[in-house]
Length: 290
Image (cartoon, rainbow, N blue to C red; front, side, top):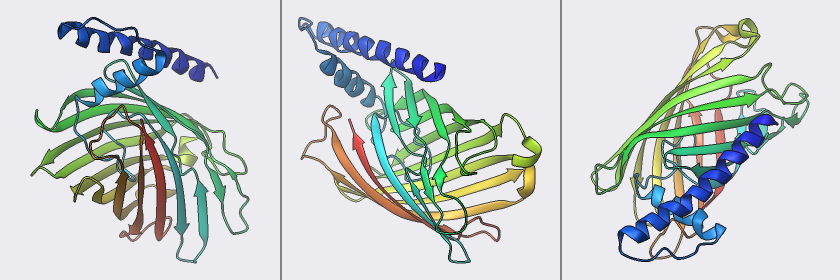
């Protein structure tokens, strides 16, 4: 609870600071700083920060190196070799908000897991994360970005639907655009439980992708998702998935970060390694970007 209170306090302070960013821009342009409401400061700060980075789409599975204000409604359907289906309502997704000039805070509510087997259904773990944009350039200034993030999941899952202990998840994420409508992105991160390491083990996740912007509304993506297990019952094993995905961006003729809009996207994780905890995973989402 203390973590949520601290995050809320920092976010409110950052949004207040956002007004000073917009006012400073007006003053430098020779315009008087007009009084702004909380809503105007909120969107003005997002607009100013978004202009400093590439306009990639948030990946389906891989972590996004960009700072984004969003909420994601996500569902996943995992299928095993034994044809067992596990449905996740939430899929470890949630919302994020931009604070100050380089920081994003995310809150990921617990997913609800429906096993469709003898396993008990229930809620998973709750998680929070913070992202710091290290360096970036928009499409006119290199079209690249590098960020660092750290997440913390709380072992709040019910009926064995979560981790055994809390866990830290540090990640380094970057991306670069090329040939006007292509983008390459990659992330490297790990999972470090705070206890019961011999049982739960650690893991290293390495994800890479390529995106293709077909037009202003449609983008295609191909991800490679790899996880290496260290310690625990899966020690020394690795699982890999290839994930094709498509994004449909519903927006007006000219997109502006100050105007909320919707993104509908989906894709399929397909196992390509000998060891894998499920054969394939169908993911569908609706996102609100604001």
